[in-house]
Length: 92
Image (cartoon, rainbow, N blue to C red; front, side, top):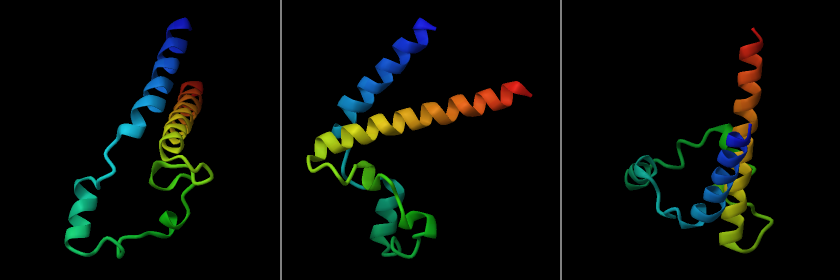
């Protein structure tokens, strides 16, 4: 169990300290959509609400802190979802 704690702490450190250095430029698919002028046409109803738009927490003014916290929250949400899913599947 100690190994998983170390892995979790490492993941949270990476999320907190490296996420602010992620490129602000659009990735390949976003770039093509912008270049061909159809990026707005692809918005689905699910995209209208996002708890962390553009990987930031809007209530926090500092962009680097906001991005770091969004990375931590995203990491914890992913961990929680994965843990819950493996518990459900292993119970069967």
